[in-house]
Length: 298
Image (tube, helix red, strand yellow):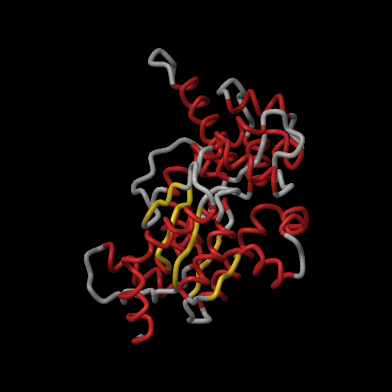
Protein backbone atom coordinates (compact mmCIF):
# COMPACT_ATOMS: atom_id res chain seq x y z
CA UNK A 1 0.00 0.00 0.00
CA UNK A 2 1.37 3.41 -0.97
CA UNK A 3 2.40 5.73 1.86
CA UNK A 4 0.54 8.56 0.15
CA UNK A 5 -2.73 6.67 -0.11
CA UNK A 6 -5.74 8.24 1.52
CA UNK A 7 -7.67 6.08 4.02
CA UNK A 8 -10.32 5.03 1.49
CA UNK A 9 -7.76 4.03 -1.13
CA UNK A 10 -5.76 2.17 1.50
CA UNK A 11 -8.86 0.33 2.64
CA UNK A 12 -9.67 -0.79 -0.92
CA UNK A 13 -6.09 -1.95 -1.46
CA UNK A 14 -6.21 -4.02 1.74
CA UNK A 15 -9.61 -5.41 0.75
CA UNK A 16 -8.26 -6.41 -2.65
CA UNK A 17 -5.27 -8.10 -1.04
CA UNK A 18 -7.54 -10.07 1.30
CA UNK A 19 -9.73 -11.24 -1.57
CA UNK A 20 -6.66 -12.28 -3.56
CA UNK A 21 -5.16 -14.12 -0.57
CA UNK A 22 -8.42 -15.88 0.29
CA UNK A 23 -8.88 -16.95 -3.32
CA UNK A 24 -5.35 -18.34 -3.37
CA UNK A 25 -5.89 -20.21 -0.09
CA UNK A 26 -8.91 -21.86 -1.68
CA UNK A 27 -6.88 -22.73 -4.77
CA UNK A 28 -9.28 -20.86 -7.04
CA UNK A 29 -8.28 -19.01 -10.20
CA UNK A 30 -10.00 -15.73 -11.06
CA UNK A 31 -11.79 -17.55 -13.86
CA UNK A 32 -13.25 -20.11 -11.43
CA UNK A 33 -14.21 -17.45 -8.88
CA UNK A 34 -15.91 -15.43 -11.62
CA UNK A 35 -17.90 -18.44 -12.77
CA UNK A 36 -19.03 -19.44 -9.27
CA UNK A 37 -19.84 -15.91 -8.09
CA UNK A 38 -21.43 -14.71 -11.32
CA UNK A 39 -19.17 -11.65 -11.28
CA UNK A 40 -16.98 -10.86 -14.29
CA UNK A 41 -13.34 -11.88 -14.18
CA UNK A 42 -12.40 -8.32 -15.15
CA UNK A 43 -14.28 -6.87 -12.16
CA UNK A 44 -12.64 -9.37 -9.80
CA UNK A 45 -9.25 -8.30 -11.16
CA UNK A 46 -10.15 -4.67 -10.43
CA UNK A 47 -11.32 -5.59 -6.95
CA UNK A 48 -8.09 -7.43 -6.18
CA UNK A 49 -5.99 -4.54 -7.45
CA UNK A 50 -7.76 -2.14 -5.07
CA UNK A 51 -9.51 -0.27 -7.86
CA UNK A 52 -12.98 -1.72 -7.45
CA UNK A 53 -15.27 0.08 -4.98
CA UNK A 54 -17.31 -3.06 -4.44
CA UNK A 55 -20.79 -3.05 -2.91
CA UNK A 56 -21.45 -5.16 0.16
CA UNK A 57 -23.84 -7.33 -1.90
CA UNK A 58 -21.18 -8.15 -4.50
CA UNK A 59 -18.58 -8.75 -1.78
CA UNK A 60 -21.01 -11.17 -0.14
CA UNK A 61 -21.30 -13.04 -3.46
CA UNK A 62 -17.51 -13.24 -3.64
CA UNK A 63 -17.19 -14.55 -0.08
CA UNK A 64 -19.99 -17.08 -0.60
CA UNK A 65 -18.35 -18.33 -3.79
CA UNK A 66 -15.14 -18.97 -1.85
CA UNK A 67 -16.92 -20.52 1.14
CA UNK A 68 -15.44 -17.78 3.33
CA UNK A 69 -16.87 -15.57 6.05
CA UNK A 70 -17.66 -12.08 4.81
CA UNK A 71 -15.89 -10.50 7.77
CA UNK A 72 -12.66 -12.29 6.82
CA UNK A 73 -12.46 -10.09 3.74
CA UNK A 74 -12.97 -6.81 5.58
CA UNK A 75 -9.64 -5.20 6.58
CA UNK A 76 -9.34 -5.08 10.36
CA UNK A 77 -6.85 -5.70 13.13
CA UNK A 78 -7.31 -9.24 14.44
CA UNK A 79 -6.48 -9.39 18.16
CA UNK A 80 -4.56 -12.69 18.19
CA UNK A 81 -2.98 -15.01 15.58
CA UNK A 82 -5.56 -17.76 16.21
CA UNK A 83 -8.51 -15.39 16.09
CA UNK A 84 -10.17 -17.27 13.19
CA UNK A 85 -9.98 -20.54 15.15
CA UNK A 86 -11.35 -18.92 18.31
CA UNK A 87 -14.18 -17.25 16.39
CA UNK A 88 -15.26 -20.50 14.72
CA UNK A 89 -15.11 -22.41 18.02
CA UNK A 90 -17.32 -19.79 19.67
CA UNK A 91 -19.84 -20.06 16.85
CA UNK A 92 -20.21 -23.79 17.49
CA UNK A 93 -19.99 -23.68 21.28
CA UNK A 94 -22.77 -24.42 23.72
CA UNK A 95 -23.71 -21.95 26.45
CA UNK A 96 -21.75 -24.02 28.97
CA UNK A 97 -18.65 -24.05 26.78
CA UNK A 98 -18.84 -20.30 26.28
CA UNK A 99 -19.11 -19.85 30.05
CA UNK A 100 -15.99 -21.99 30.52
CA UNK A 101 -14.13 -19.98 27.87
CA UNK A 102 -15.07 -16.73 29.57
CA UNK A 103 -13.80 -18.12 32.87
CA UNK A 104 -10.43 -18.99 31.32
CA UNK A 105 -10.09 -15.62 29.59
CA UNK A 106 -10.97 -13.88 32.83
CA UNK A 107 -8.19 -15.77 34.64
CA UNK A 108 -10.32 -18.48 36.22
CA UNK A 109 -9.18 -22.06 36.78
CA UNK A 110 -12.35 -24.12 36.57
CA UNK A 111 -12.37 -24.76 32.83
CA UNK A 112 -11.45 -28.23 31.71
CA UNK A 113 -8.57 -28.48 29.31
CA UNK A 114 -8.86 -30.74 26.28
CA UNK A 115 -6.05 -33.19 25.75
CA UNK A 116 -5.79 -34.45 22.20
CA UNK A 117 -4.63 -38.02 21.67
CA UNK A 118 -1.86 -38.74 19.18
CA UNK A 119 -3.38 -40.06 15.95
CA UNK A 120 -0.32 -40.41 13.76
CA UNK A 121 1.37 -38.45 11.02
CA UNK A 122 -0.37 -36.02 8.69
CA UNK A 123 1.12 -34.83 5.41
CA UNK A 124 0.22 -31.36 4.17
CA UNK A 125 1.24 -29.37 1.11
CA UNK A 126 0.18 -28.43 -2.40
CA UNK A 127 -1.14 -30.91 -4.92
CA UNK A 128 1.82 -32.63 -6.52
CA UNK A 129 3.84 -32.62 -3.29
CA UNK A 130 3.83 -36.42 -3.18
CA UNK A 131 1.54 -36.82 -0.17
CA UNK A 132 -0.18 -39.93 -1.52
CA UNK A 133 2.89 -41.63 -2.99
CA UNK A 134 5.23 -40.92 -0.10
CA UNK A 135 2.47 -41.41 2.48
CA UNK A 136 1.84 -44.95 1.26
CA UNK A 137 5.55 -45.72 1.37
CA UNK A 138 5.90 -44.32 4.89
CA UNK A 139 2.85 -46.21 6.19
CA UNK A 140 4.18 -49.48 4.78
CA UNK A 141 7.60 -48.82 6.30
CA UNK A 142 6.29 -48.18 9.84
CA UNK A 143 3.33 -50.58 9.73
CA UNK A 144 0.51 -48.05 10.09
CA UNK A 145 -2.58 -47.66 7.95
CA UNK A 146 -2.58 -45.09 5.15
CA UNK A 147 -5.58 -42.83 4.65
CA UNK A 148 -6.32 -40.19 2.02
CA UNK A 149 -8.72 -37.69 3.53
CA UNK A 150 -10.31 -36.78 0.19
CA UNK A 151 -11.07 -40.44 -0.54
CA UNK A 152 -12.67 -40.74 2.91
CA UNK A 153 -14.85 -37.74 2.11
CA UNK A 154 -15.88 -39.30 -1.20
CA UNK A 155 -16.65 -42.66 0.41
CA UNK A 156 -18.71 -41.13 3.22
CA UNK A 157 -20.78 -38.97 0.87
CA UNK A 158 -20.99 -41.13 -2.24
CA UNK A 159 -19.73 -38.27 -4.43
CA UNK A 160 -16.42 -37.21 -5.91
CA UNK A 161 -14.73 -34.09 -4.56
CA UNK A 162 -15.54 -32.28 -7.80
CA UNK A 163 -19.21 -33.26 -7.50
CA UNK A 164 -19.36 -32.17 -3.86
CA UNK A 165 -17.94 -28.75 -4.69
CA UNK A 166 -20.26 -28.38 -7.68
CA UNK A 167 -23.33 -29.26 -5.60
CA UNK A 168 -22.50 -27.75 -2.21
CA UNK A 169 -19.73 -25.24 -2.91
CA UNK A 170 -16.47 -24.74 -1.02
CA UNK A 171 -18.25 -24.24 2.30
CA UNK A 172 -20.14 -27.53 1.94
CA UNK A 173 -16.98 -29.39 1.05
CA UNK A 174 -15.12 -27.97 4.05
CA UNK A 175 -17.95 -29.09 6.36
CA UNK A 176 -17.72 -32.61 4.95
CA UNK A 177 -13.93 -32.51 5.26
CA UNK A 178 -14.18 -31.63 8.94
CA UNK A 179 -16.78 -34.35 9.54
CA UNK A 180 -14.64 -36.96 7.77
CA UNK A 181 -11.62 -35.98 9.86
CA UNK A 182 -13.67 -36.30 13.03
CA UNK A 183 -14.72 -39.82 12.08
CA UNK A 184 -11.11 -40.78 11.36
CA UNK A 185 -9.98 -39.52 14.74
CA UNK A 186 -12.76 -41.49 16.40
CA UNK A 187 -11.15 -44.72 15.17
CA UNK A 188 -8.38 -44.26 17.75
CA UNK A 189 -5.77 -45.90 15.54
CA UNK A 190 -2.39 -44.76 14.28
CA UNK A 191 -2.35 -43.66 10.66
CA UNK A 192 -0.46 -41.77 8.02
CA UNK A 193 -2.92 -39.20 6.69
CA UNK A 194 -2.62 -37.46 3.33
CA UNK A 195 -4.64 -34.24 3.38
CA UNK A 196 -5.97 -32.03 0.62
CA UNK A 197 -3.83 -29.04 -0.27
CA UNK A 198 -6.47 -26.53 0.81
CA UNK A 199 -7.15 -27.97 4.26
CA UNK A 200 -5.15 -25.09 5.75
CA UNK A 201 -7.85 -22.65 4.60
CA UNK A 202 -10.33 -23.91 7.23
CA UNK A 203 -9.04 -22.78 10.66
CA UNK A 204 -10.84 -25.32 12.84
CA UNK A 205 -10.02 -28.30 10.63
CA UNK A 206 -6.37 -27.34 10.30
CA UNK A 207 -6.10 -26.72 14.05
CA UNK A 208 -7.47 -30.23 14.60
CA UNK A 209 -4.81 -31.63 12.26
CA UNK A 210 -2.04 -29.77 14.08
CA UNK A 211 -3.24 -30.85 17.53
CA UNK A 212 -3.90 -34.51 16.64
CA UNK A 213 -1.00 -35.40 14.35
CA UNK A 214 2.71 -34.94 13.95
CA UNK A 215 2.37 -32.80 10.84
CA UNK A 216 4.84 -32.80 7.95
CA UNK A 217 4.88 -30.18 5.21
CA UNK A 218 5.99 -31.76 1.95
CA UNK A 219 7.31 -28.99 -0.25
CA UNK A 220 8.89 -28.72 -3.67
CA UNK A 221 9.53 -26.10 -6.31
CA UNK A 222 6.42 -24.69 -8.04
CA UNK A 223 7.61 -26.16 -11.35
CA UNK A 224 7.83 -29.61 -9.77
CA UNK A 225 4.34 -29.30 -8.29
CA UNK A 226 2.95 -28.35 -11.69
CA UNK A 227 4.81 -31.10 -13.55
CA UNK A 228 3.56 -33.75 -11.13
CA UNK A 229 -0.03 -32.50 -11.34
CA UNK A 230 0.14 -32.47 -15.13
CA UNK A 231 1.53 -36.00 -14.99
CA UNK A 232 -1.55 -37.03 -13.02
CA UNK A 233 -3.81 -35.44 -15.64
CA UNK A 234 -5.35 -33.23 -12.97
CA UNK A 235 -5.30 -29.43 -13.21
CA UNK A 236 -8.13 -28.60 -10.80
CA UNK A 237 -9.00 -25.77 -10.45
CA UNK A 238 -6.77 -24.27 -13.15
CA UNK A 239 -7.62 -26.33 -16.24
CA UNK A 240 -7.04 -24.55 -19.55
CA UNK A 241 -5.81 -21.46 -17.72
CA UNK A 242 -2.77 -19.99 -19.45
CA UNK A 243 -1.77 -18.33 -16.19
CA UNK A 244 -1.79 -21.65 -14.32
CA UNK A 245 1.80 -21.33 -13.12
CA UNK A 246 1.24 -17.79 -11.88
CA UNK A 247 -1.89 -18.96 -10.04
CA UNK A 248 0.03 -21.85 -8.50
CA UNK A 249 2.75 -19.51 -7.26
CA UNK A 250 0.10 -17.22 -5.76
CA UNK A 251 -1.54 -20.17 -4.00
CA UNK A 252 1.81 -21.31 -2.62
CA UNK A 253 2.76 -17.86 -1.34
CA UNK A 254 -0.63 -17.48 0.37
CA UNK A 255 -0.48 -20.89 2.02
CA UNK A 256 3.19 -20.97 3.00
CA UNK A 257 2.70 -19.26 6.41
CA UNK A 258 0.09 -21.90 7.26
CA UNK A 259 2.05 -24.86 5.89
CA UNK A 260 4.99 -23.58 7.94
CA UNK A 261 3.05 -24.31 11.15
CA UNK A 262 3.76 -28.01 10.58
CA UNK A 263 5.90 -29.92 13.06
CA UNK A 264 8.55 -30.49 10.38
CA UNK A 265 9.31 -29.73 6.75
CA UNK A 266 10.55 -32.20 4.15
CA UNK A 267 11.84 -30.54 0.99
CA UNK A 268 11.62 -33.01 -1.92
CA UNK A 269 12.93 -30.59 -4.55
CA UNK A 270 15.18 -32.41 -7.00
CA UNK A 271 14.78 -35.79 -5.26
CA UNK A 272 13.57 -39.04 -6.79
CA UNK A 273 10.76 -40.92 -5.04
CA UNK A 274 13.00 -43.26 -3.04
CA UNK A 275 15.26 -40.47 -1.80
CA UNK A 276 12.24 -38.36 -0.87
CA UNK A 277 10.75 -41.31 1.03
CA UNK A 278 14.00 -41.81 2.93
CA UNK A 279 14.05 -38.15 3.89
CA UNK A 280 10.45 -38.42 5.13
CA UNK A 281 11.27 -41.49 7.23
CA UNK A 282 14.21 -39.63 8.77
CA UNK A 283 11.95 -36.67 9.58
CA UNK A 284 9.47 -38.76 11.59
CA UNK A 285 11.96 -41.12 13.24
CA UNK A 286 12.57 -38.96 16.36
CA UNK A 287 8.88 -38.96 17.32
CA UNK A 288 7.70 -42.44 16.32
CA UNK A 289 8.84 -44.38 19.35
CA UNK A 290 7.72 -42.05 22.12
CA UNK A 291 4.46 -40.97 20.51
CA UNK A 292 3.44 -44.50 19.54
CA UNK A 293 4.16 -45.70 23.07
CA UNK A 294 2.05 -42.89 24.54
CA UNK A 295 -0.81 -43.80 22.20
CA UNK A 296 -0.67 -47.48 23.18
CA UNK A 297 -0.62 -46.59 26.86
CA UNK A 298 -3.57 -44.20 26.53
